[in-house]
Length: 345
Image 1 (cartoon, rainbow, N blue to C red):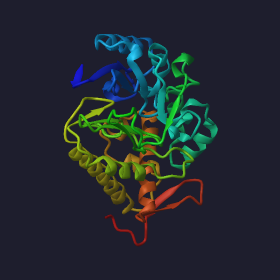
Image 2: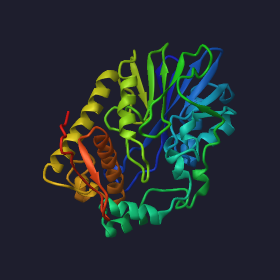
Image 3: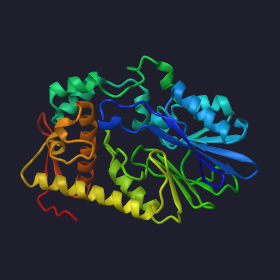
Image 4: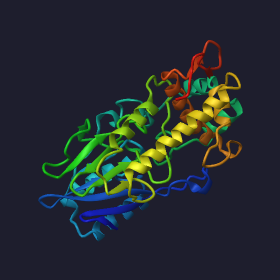
């Protein structure tokens, strides 16, 4: 489907997630973007499956371009629904794979899902956050697919990155396609701003109706939500006519959508703060008291609760950094409470 002059949108299917009501997101939106001198750029690739690759290849053929006219495949971030087909796409087109250096496999926590993790350590850390043992068992036995757990090992081959980016690069000379580093969802998330057509390829940074998963990985010392909020500020006032996200659909008015996302997180801070007014709580207890959009807490599968818990921890980390809450991890369990002089701004 053509979404702007010289810009095609391809739908690459994703497997339904039986653990999420409604099955979760069903497509990754991949974009084919024209550049001067009859060159083309592809943004993202989609989840690796034979069905997905066939769909991507068929839509590429229907666009009328020759695969060899593609000169670069920009991957917005490491997650498999974006990077999974990158290697197969490179075989088809010959185009190099470009990605932010912080999301290149093996560089840091964002890309660590490509590698085996120490489940015993993760289990101990989750228990310290208040996660019940019986739910941990179910979360681990029905958790998300990983390179180790999936019988189709080829589906999880890490992308062979040819070009490592910092953000701020023009993808091709005189193309008007500029990369923007927008960390939060992953450490190395990239967006692409098309200055000429006033398009913003937002990856998962800004989506039309849902908010991206921003969590604090176990053992991580940074502030991913703080980086995400700061990165929303980078893009909020861009001169954009249409936002082209990696899921759902294109939409106008980037400015208003960014404000909605910021308001969502402000509301979440207030929810957390109101709970802590009743006394110290573990992150799990706080998560159980939050109103989640996907379903009530009691109806969530333990593996979904685990993801929600890590979102809560990211919010608590941000609030700790702004002096609103304090953390006590002197015992076996981690507790948070209102800081003595805190005010929720």
